[in-house]
Length: 438
Image (tube, rainbow, N blue to C red):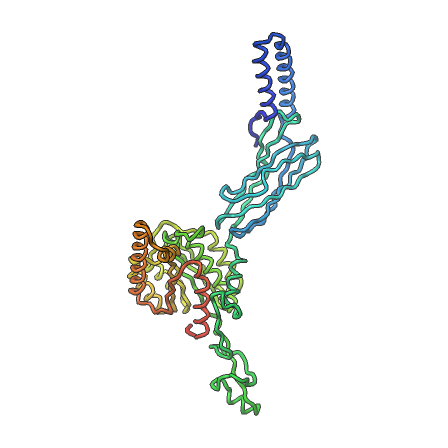
């Protein structure tokens, strides 16, 4: 599709000069013939240039980009411009990328000979998860004499999917399970030989518990033999993820929901490595159900099902969500509720937890606004500051009281800032796995 022919800056400059010459000719009669002659000449040249440019150039545009992008990272896009016509084409290139993304490397000016092509690479950074699309590229083609320009939109649209940055999530998982990194905030305290599933028989080692000795095998082999166990596998980890209006809250540039989603994927990655099935159900907005599935396929399906979920303006219905989950889960599971608790939620959330706890092992993670902790720690030296401090303390007291009224044991409740959620969930999961509570 081509827009109308428009004058270029060169033609506008010529017209401006001719206008100035006309003003001078109105005062100096000797300049009048020059003004008329240059005007006719410029008009003739402009008309010839416009006539030559009446047809769109034979250009073909190819866009090369990955079909899946991680959010918040810079990625390359390459446009190849093929000149399939018989004349040289001078143009400026713009691409129709998502308007809110950050971009580096455009616009680009090219001069392409007949039968040749130019490759242009620029960088984009996606600012949010979900589906995204590119439209046909914008080409501002200049006429042979550079007096006119015409904008063409050429090329096929492209659709991509923007996922959470899984490389960062993998790093969080590794740091959370690294026994040599106490500063990571998540340390796994393994106990050799302890667990719930039998793994193998082996010779006794110093430090093994006497309870782990297999006396029958010891008698047969005439030496101490120990039964070695491993953590129980083949369990289900199911996330109940709030997509209601409170998850729209932000710490810095990231919403609570995005922090929660990152924590879900981090723990989901670890759980499938442990041999557990991973599933999810959203509530508080659009309801999505991903049945628990083991292995990398389960994690890929989970990621594909939630990468484009966004929090809504709706209020969460905890009891309805618990009922829906119970109807879908037949096997005992480790259920992780992730929400942002308010004092008016205590009754509904308590009922939901009690309902699910009759069959499943349930923990609740409530996201606390990080800004509240910062406001409480600031020095108070003004009256507005005192009001802000008092309101913050009052809010946090109401929050603590709501949590107390839930009646959930401390090990089954996490009240934490969003940036610490991933490590906290990983720790709690590993503790539960090692204790055999499932």
